[in-house]
Length: 228
Image 1 (tube, rainbow, N blue to C red):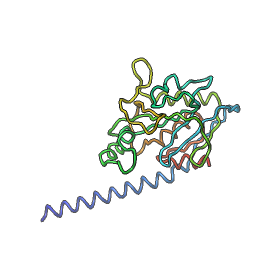
Image 2: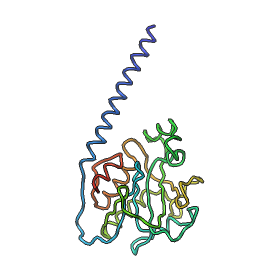
Image 3: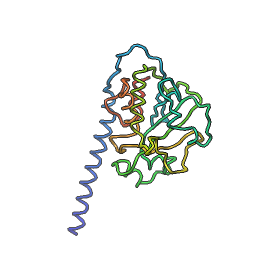
Image 4: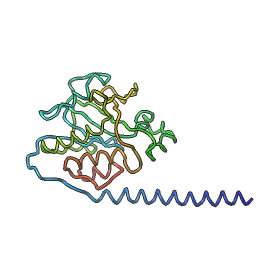
């Protein structure tokens, strides 16, 4: 009986701590994104269009496939996609937990083990790249026009997130999993967690190139609120 009481007491205490943690986390996730930084207006000439794109949960950074500053197709070849369509004009890049990407095509497929590993940084990460022929503004897609200097800073940030092969090219994930005909997964640096999410990565990408960004946000809503 004493053992049972002890177990119940510890379980209740653990539940209280868990609920308190969730409450504090959600409150921080709501309030902190209201605090923003940037933009860096050190250059007036802004002539390269990039986009932020969300599926309702996850934010991608979208850039032109080729400019006179950088050619993404050289390091993210069309051959890595199923359709190998060389007419694409834009490349979307997103960072996230590898288990979520490869094992959870829908929320119905989410496993408890995958969620726990992702929440506490216990698994590896990947970069998801998708080629698009067109990119149209909508509530889920916002255009940002930046300078050449800032674009090069963005390219540097994204390239630094790839885990490279010995030859210096991004390491393609050894998996047949794809979301469509024009996407591919690459090994990434960093560890996903409750505090460093896919949207945190995208938010930091905007910071890296002097654009409006939240001080911190785990959700896409914080980013898109700045670009309404």
